[in-house]
Image (tube, rainbow, N blue to C red; front, side, top):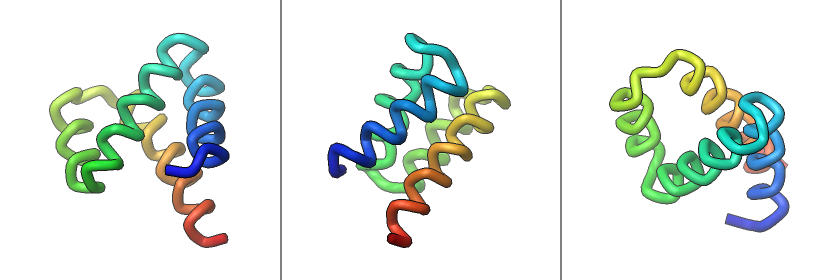
Length: 69
């Protein structure tokens, strides 16, 4: 993943979840995304956390915007 997109994802996660937890979410999200979108869905299902689902939805939107450009 290109560095500017990684920074955008990290900043959005930190904005939504706080500095430390946001960083952890961003790192986990990017790791799972690197293995495929199905892996992201499995991760979210395993975590079973509505707030995490909401944050990851925002992060997916950031990634999709970057893909469109």
